[in-house]
Amino acid sequence: MKVPQASISETVTQHLAGRILRGELLPGTALPGENELATEYAVSRTSIRNALAVLAAKGLISIQAKKRSTITHRDQWSLLDLDVLNWLSKGHVDAQLVEQLMITRLIFEPNVATLAAMNANGHDLAALEDALTLMRRGQKEADREPFEEGDIAFHQALLRAAHNPFLLALGNALSAAMVLSFRQTLEEDVRLTKTAIDEHYRLFEAIRLRNADDARQHMRSILLHAAQKSIWQQRPAFIDSIL
Image (cartoon, rainbow, N blue to C red; front, side, top):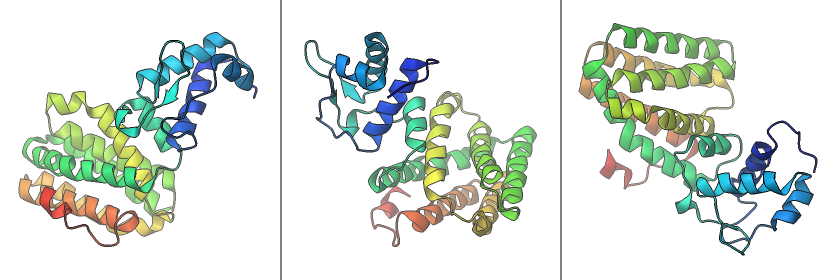
């Protein structure tokens, strides 16, 4: 396999990461040795060694001296690492991981909406409204790109509107996790997203009116409806315990 010379080790890293994240290389599986991988990818052993070091740093493989690298179990992956999230978003994500991501969002985002309703300023409201406008344009023009861009921008603006420095510090990882979730739950036909846009508008209004309880409830509804479209036909009983 011939790899472009620009960013050689990064290209190898991404390809191996994709195979791991897609389940082509199962936990406990030993990778070929450095010489074999160098031959397969037509790169130097140094590039292979660099790629393996990156994968090990992100928890995807385990490197031991004088032994072949092995694929680790998912509970060792750095799932909030930006690179890992971006690699995941480029391929198919198994249903169990999508479900766990949605559960995480249900625990987290209604509280972000509550804080936003309490703390949002005029700049935050303008950013939320701009994002809604972009979502509506994407829906009306049946164009996924502006819809997805607006959806991501809305939730990023919501994080900023909470005005919590710790949430802002986590913002990049949380935003990347949300992108992964959006891509797994968005309808194929963007024209069918009008209901979701209306829900986002009701959330915006609750924040504008500083109604924290309504903001929390609207965010729950947005997430639950997204989950019911692609994850749960019937909401699991345990979900009520975390809401």
